[in-house]
Length: 489
Image (cartoon, rainbow, N blue to C red; front, side):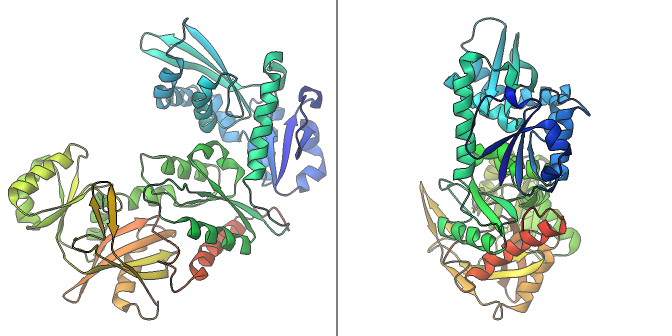
C-alpha cells in the first residue's frame, strides 16, 4: 500500500522518509492520478481540518476512494465535539493521573507525534491518546482540578508547530512508524487487493488459535488476494489502515477485543468477531433467554439473582452447574452438590454480576463442538473431558489439563447434532461460531454458543486441513468484494 503524507504546503514537511510520498493537499483533491490510485494510506497533516475545509475534504475523499485516511472524518468530527473529549478524558483517567502525578502547576500541554512524546515517561499516555484519536500529530492540553487532572482540549497539530528542539524526535517517530508499518506487512504481490489485520498475541493465556494456525490463516488470505498482518493490542490506533479485522484473541465485552471490533465496524471494516456477536455469545444470560424463546433444546436452566437464591435446588436440581455470564474456557463455571454449597457459591458469584446462570448438571464423556461460518457447517469435533474431571479443561493451580480433541468427518457427524447446532448458531450472526452440544439419552442439548471458537493446527483442522482456513478467507473476500472496495489488480 502506498503511503501519502498530505499537507497544504510541502515545504512545511521538512522530512524525507523512504517509501513515503509528500503530496500537496490541492493536488490530492483534484489530480486524477490520486483519484485513480489504489491501495493508499493517506496521512492528513493539513492545518485546516474544520468542516468543509481542505483537510476535511482530504480525509473525506480518501475514504470515498477506498484509501485509508489518518485521521478519518469520524476522528476529525470527534476532536471538535466536547462530549466526546469529556468521555475520552474519563476513560483515560487512570493513565492521565498516573502520567501527570509528578507535575507541578495547573496546566500542561502534551505533543503527541505518531503516538509518542519526546519525554519517555509520557509514552503510555501518548499511545492511549493516539489509539483513541488516531492522527499523526495531536496537541493535548490538561488542566488540574480539585478532582485531579482533566483533558481540557485536544486538537490536531500542524508541522509548522513542531518546535526546532522536537524536529529530530519527530523525524525518528515518523521513521519508526512508517518502517514498522511496512516491515510488519508480509511481502505481497500486486495481486493483493485487500489488507486484513489479525489480532493475535503469542502471550494470550488461552489463545483461540496457535501460531501454526495463524500462519495458515495468513497463507489462506494470500490465496484470496488478501494481505494479512498480525497486530497486537498496541495497534488499536492503526485499525483504519485495513479493510478487515479478524480477532484471534479471547473476546470479552469489557476488553480491548471489543474495542477493536467496535472501532473496526465504525471505520467500515469487515469484522470477525462483530461487536454484536461478542455481546451475545459471551453472555450466558442472553443465551439462556434466546434458547428458551426459540425452543433450542438445552439442559434445565434458570437465571438466578439475589431474590431467588433459595429456589435453586427446586428450579434446577442438584448437583448443578453455576456459570458466570461472561465466563470463557470453563472459567467462572462451578459444580455444586448441596443446597448449602450452592447458595454459598451463588452469593459469591452474585457479588460480581447481577445475574448468574444455574444449569442442570448433564454428565457426558465428551461435548460435540460444531464450527459454523456464515450459518454453514465448517468443522465438527468431539471435545473429550479432561481425565478424571467433569470439564474439558481441568485447572490445578497454575496448570491446565485438556481433554482429547477428536476431529470428525463432516459426513460422519450425527445429522441431529449438526442441525441443532445450525439452528442455535443462526440466532447470533453470520460470522464464525462454535456450538457446544451434548447427547444424553438420545436427546441433543445445546450447552452454549461461542464466538471466537478454537481453531488450532492439528486439532480442529486435523481432517480438513486448509479447507477451514480457505473458507474463512473466502468469507472475508466475498464481503470485501460485495462492498466494492477493491484497490488493486
